[in-house]
Structures are given as C-alpha cells and as structure tokens.
Amino acid sequence: MRKIAALYSGLSYQNRAWNEPKYRKYIADIVYVPDMGPESLAGFDVVLLPSRLHTGLLMKLKPLLDSFAAQGGTVVVFWPNDAEQIVPNQNWEDRPTNFWWWLDKNAKSGIEQRNPGHDLYNYITLQDATWHYHGVFWPQGDVVPLVETEDGGAILYVDKSSTAGTWVVTSLDPEFHYGSYFMPATERFLDGFLPWLAEGEL
Amino acid sequence: MEKHEIAVLDIKVGVMGEVLGSTGYSYIDMYELPHASLDAYACLVINGSSDQEFLLKHKAVIENFLDQGKVVLFGGQLFRPWLPGGSDFIPRTIHSHLDYHITVAKEHPIFEGVDPSELTYKKGVAGFFARGHHPVPEGAEVLLTLPDGEPTLYIDRSSTKGTLMVSSGYNLLGYRDGDSTSLIGERVEAWIEQEYKQLQEGVPSR
Image 1 (cartoon, rainbow over the protein chains, first blue to last red):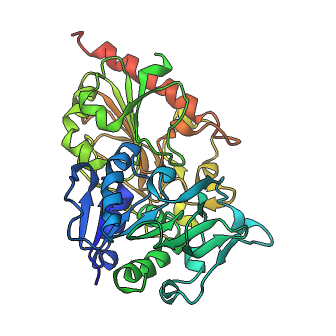
Image 2: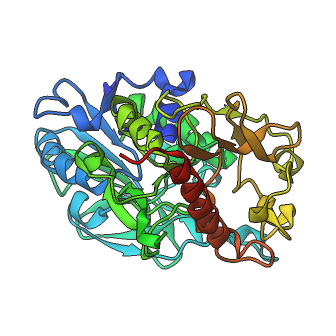
C-alpha cells in the first residue's frame, strides 16, 4: 500500500474526512500544513492536497510539492485555490458553478467519462464523480484525461509527463462536501478514490 | 459603529456563503491574529473555514477581545475547544429534506417577517443552512432550531464579558438577497452595533 500523507490545515471538513475510519485506514499520516518543514514529506509516496487551502499556506507548500514530484512522488490535488501556481503545465479556467443542473427537466451534468478502461473506473463510476465543479483545467502536456466537460475541459486527469512524478488533478472538492455532511455522491467518490490511490494503478 | 469596526478573520480562499469580498468590513489574515491590534474593532467575525488548531493555540486572543465588551460572530462546525462557551458540532442524522427544516425558536428583530422555509430551501433544495447543532452554554438565547429543537443559532452573553453569536451554519452577515431574507445581513449589523453599545456602557473605561 502506498504511504499517503493527507495535508490538513485545521478545517472542520478536513478533520472529519481524514479521520473517518474507512478513509483513515488508507492515510499513513495527517500532516498539519502550518507546521510543515522541508523534510515533512520524506518517506511518503503520495501527498493529498485538500481544497480551500489558505493562499499563504499554498505558497509555502509549492516548493515542497515541486521537489516531492521531482523525486518521483505522486501529488493529488483537489480543487486548488490558485491552481495556476500549484499545478504544473496547464491553464486553469474558472467557471461559474451550476449547483442546480440536476433540477432541470432534461437534466444533464455536462460531465463525460474518458478512458473508461482506466483502473480508477474499477473503483468509482462516472456518477460518483458527478456533482458540480468549479472550473476546468486545460493541460498542455501528454496527460490521461478521466473526466471532462463536453467541450473538453479536464475535471479529473493524471499527468505523468510534466514532472518526474505523477500529478492526479481534479477540480472536484469531495472532502469539503463529505466533511461538511453534504452531498452523498462525494462519499461514494472518496469510498473508491482513496483505495485507488493507496493500491490501484495510477 | 462604522462598518470597518467589524473585522473579518480572512481565510484567504473563496468559500460560498461565507463573508468575503468588498463588504466595507476590515479584514485580518487569520494567521496574523496573534499580532494584530484589535483595539479598533467592535466585532470579530470568524468563518467556518478557519484553522481551528490555530484558533485553539490562540484562544486567549479571542477571550481577551470578548472580555473588553465586544462581539464575536462564528458560523461553522466546531471541533476544537477554542470558542468560549462552545461545544463540538453534532451532525443531525438526515433521512429526508424535512430533517433540515429551520424554525424561528424565539422572536427576534433579525428574523422579523422572515419565512424560515426560505432559510431551509434554496431553489427547493434543503441543507445549505445547517446540518447539525452545537449544544449551547447555560443561559444562551436560542434563536433558530432544527426539527427536534436542536439550536442552530444562539446568542451567549454569559461565557464572557462580551457577546457571542454562534451558528452551526453560516454566520448571517452574508444574507443580502431572497424574498424575506434580504434584510438579515443589515439587521445583524444593526444588532452588533446595539449589542456593542450596551456592552460598552457596562464596561468600566480603561
């Protein structure tokens, strides 16, 4: 099993999501970001960044993440604040969030599956990744898209080409909703996503 | 009291429903709290997406602020004991949207003419407002409740020499729209002003 460091900045929803026993068993350590130093990620295989990190903390993290990826580590990013600065080799496009698409008569999320044979889809379904999203990535490198909008913006993708490591990047924010006791699809997403991160083929 | 006498602890990230942007309030980076001078402020607003480990480490700053006869607003889910009189958030077990129904438990000018179902539902969807509660300290005034009487909004004038308004959902300063809810934000501002004035009358001048 890969050693996962789940980053934590003292927020209630991170606290709930990372400490839920069915997720905690896949997390080697919960690492409090304000206390992190240059060696804090040593010994981990995967670092998991929650959404909604204070921008000052993100700037402090950036060199640590870059060096972690340069050494072959896997960086997982949930809907990042300041995406342009944190995620390599892509352009971020903010999109107004439609919380209400599923209320329409001919409800269509506008979210589509890519690479259905990818190992992630042995762990989750497209429906488990379907709630709302806050924007899309336009990756520049050779990446594996897994969830995209109809017009080709990436919502979830894996990038093994831009750095020596692996970046698993999504504009979804499952730990926020699960940790805030809100939105059941986000629980199904985490139920599959964390075991995939720990044991699956990335 | 001027708007800039309300200081918001800035979480430096956009989170829906929390007090952000150009509101006329003062903003303090939350990690600067221990170094910031709070003398100029009547009220401190603490968002739900705040670092509660950090707030616990610096809880004395918040206690001291309150003990000068000032007001603190918090909206969110507590899980560390940093807020005077505060208890850990208890989620409600949700079986249907009815479990989210909000009731005005006590008449209060903030909620005059407010249709509580407009607090519960947005576009027919429930759950944005509160999904659980904090047990209240002794003597607290409960304003809003969930279906089994769980308090989702209370005012606490007993735990400190100041006043706390504590919500298990959002703090209410952000409410500026809706048919019956559009005045809530300004009414909370007026309430802060009145509360602060009364507290200052009772606090011996330093």
